[in-house]
Image (cartoon, rainbow, N blue to C red; front, side):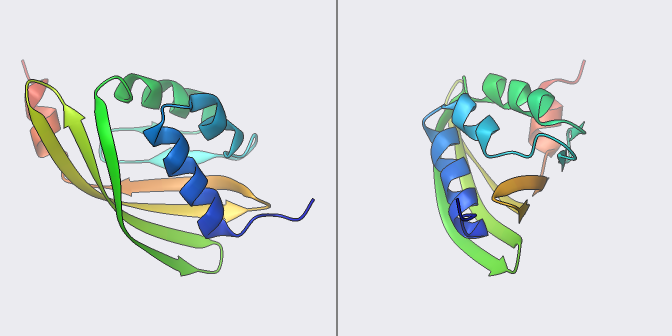
Length: 122
């Protein structure tokens, strides 16, 4: 089976996230060597990463993919995540994904986490 293009893999990943298909999301991540980093978290394995996103999925209303850039195995996607808490809130973010062998091996998510952190301050 021929590997899918990196942008196609990432697009399938976001479609699975939007539909809360966490099994499909996990299937698109590398079994070994996966890592992820964001302003809030660092993961060294795909299973822990997906477990966290499953919790986020509870409040996720919609994902809007605004723009995607491709450079070899690197895919950068500019997105709006819309969350429903007490009211609908939109978080703009950029996600840099590295795809090798048809699997995402690295995800770095960049966004302003200050409002999120403020919600959980004591």
